Length: 627
Image 1 (cartoon, helix red, strand yellow):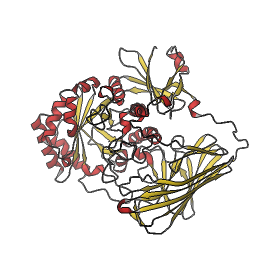
Image 2 (cartoon, helix red, strand yellow):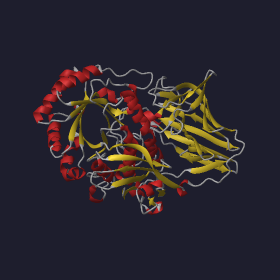
Image 3 (tube, helix red, strand yellow):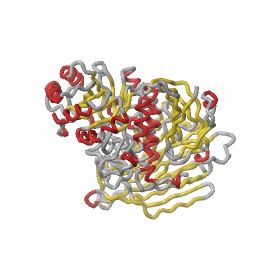
Image 4 (cartoon, rainbow, N blue to C red):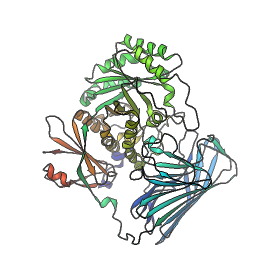
């Protein structure tokens, strides 16, 4: 069935990802893709999410090296891979990486890499990156061997650590399953770990070169840089599971009713001054969605002024819902002077938002470990100025960027009526699997926010696949070729069924956070539910994500009930019960393969005539339920 679906429908591009090569050595299996190892499993259980050799540029963009002289040898209980990777940097600089990967006896994998440059090469990071999974791993025991030889027995962080949980690492050992452990030994440099759930990556990342060291840095001409990763599996079980593995594509996903419940959040749309005219032209689509919230972005540093407020006022009057003004405060003058001036512009235009979100503009930039936060007035002063300039209006704070920044600079919540932040799934990787896997991190993010801010009203968004701002470099990446690249300000999948599935999966993963509002898109532009001029235009101009956003807007305020999936990486589901209508079972396939779904006991409780169904690639489904 997957082959019958036009890739453009699924991904918004005819660019196809290279399928991984499955390599096995006894009970050990890995996917070899783009020169790196993904989905490393032992006896069917994920051990590591990835072992990759990565080269990053000065904006933390990841090079896509060309691979030559690729040779793969496979035997019954061993495999080996060799290749040479080439990176082309600015000003004619080059870097060559010679790689050898081998596995023997099903229990050890060795990944050797030697980098050398004939020209000298600037980089923020060059070396190995090891990803441990988080689901089933967070909060469990782990042993860390440090470079000085001492061993630390501790736990993987459960709540998300703002800074590195482990530093000066030489090896890390964790339990894969009872009586099976995995040691990952890192040689050639000093490694440390960061909690990538900060960025909504579903992994703990162990990486080379401590962030406290200067970056970017130079790889010296003709100086060899060698590193090695050795993964060793220790299995003390008396009997090994020798049953043949079942292909994930042939498994059936069972959906049962869970115990959690709550109320569906309001759905918002973000609107910028740059998209105001297009938004007005799409007023019929705005009315069709009927969002409960319009989030108006305002940034004086971007040239926004009184004209923006006039447009905002016109748009707000078209929508029956509430509106929030999001202010990136320049902080070039006193907060009171700047907020008073912005309030005067707003009042002159007649715009009356229901809430204000305010944050210093500099707080959109990340502050890596070892560096100081950019200078700006105390947040208490910023919030007091906003209260004075916008009396009687709800005040929100947090970060206009991502949870990472909120976790590292925890805003004082007492002056605020609600907390807000965004997420983005293409900070570190942009392949389809990595993007969908970010959904696994969302419950950890919302639980961490609740641990910090308690029951304070909580909003998320705008959170879209394309990146609207880059806190980790000087700019977002232009994507003129419409391909999958990290940190890009446009992404082809936003035009496709992939985004429709991602948005519903996102909503399902944050339901139990008790959000006040969730914003997953704009109305128009590169983040919009409809395509604009010069963009790929689906039927009627509506992108597939329109269906998810409009459906969620119709369900706002409805009770929801949890559903438990036997394979949440493949299929998610929940029940919504809108007033005066039949309850609905909402399902989403997060994979490019058709998924067989059975309803288990759910079918008996809700008298479903069908015991199951097939969900196509990245398909969203809805079934009316009879109590």
